[in-house]
Amino acid sequence: MKVSRRALLLTGLAACAPARAQTWPAKPITVLVPSTAGGVVDIAARNVGPGIAADLGQSVVVENRPGAGGHIAAAAVARAAPDGYTLLCSAGSILVSGIVRNLPYNPMTDLAPVARLTLGSFLLLVGKDSPFQTLSDLITYGKANPGKLLYASTSVGNSTHIGGEMLSLLTGMKATHVPYKGNVQALLDLAAGRVHYSIDSRPPALPLIRSGQVRVLAVTSGQREPDYPNLPAIGEQVPGYGLEGWVGLFAPRRTPPDVMARLDAAARRTLSDPAVVQRMRESGGEPAYLNPEATTKFMALDHERISRVVREANITAD
Image (tube, rainbow, N blue to C red):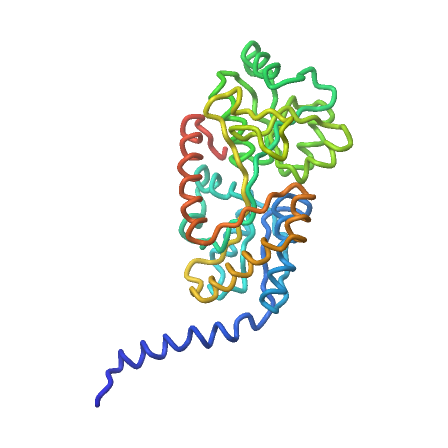
């Protein structure tokens, strides 16, 4: 009986996957974080990293590689060998930047989602001495005084920028955008009264909230959240408003399916660990696991929603 060369090749390829699954990972896995230490993504990566390492039986090294709005790290992973040893932990704002900037890679096609790790609303914040006691106070002043309100974001074209522009679009108020390079200086200037309000994620804002240096006017969700029933939601007063931030784990495109499956399973089991869940919640994150297929669909919907705001607000990277 003659066996074709093609049949032998296919048989050999099929045999490779089980062999690789048994030997991978044979060396430490590096997770690149496109921001400085202490931010929401860094905290998420360092909370799940040890669990994934224990599950896979191999070290996981979290490496901060900030710069260029997060694209130095993302581009490095997009160009990395698709072998499961170089991953990206990034916020959903990577999609925003892919819309408003010309990038050397496409976040939607050059990065393969391993799992969504967290999901949660942002906070609309003011300084402790702000005259605005409610969201209505802020909106009323903004509509009556076009351009006088200064709002901070943590970068041009990221989710906090999108959230500020969405508020202006849906209320008719006019505010001036003041972009920063990260959370720290933006929050310090907010506390000092140099800007009037900001939209930011919970982990970096919590220390200033707890110390009384900034106040929360509202959460950016469409309705009140069960864990924060006393905080009004912007969507309660502004129909159609809703902004949620998320963090995901990504691998280079064409990473083998068996490696992706092991990474996904490790992330899923880690996020079901009560100790990990508690640590994440204490630091302001909310675990919200989705598998690769569900994350891909979630990203497509998020991309469509963000694109609409970018077009209507004429947001550019300039």
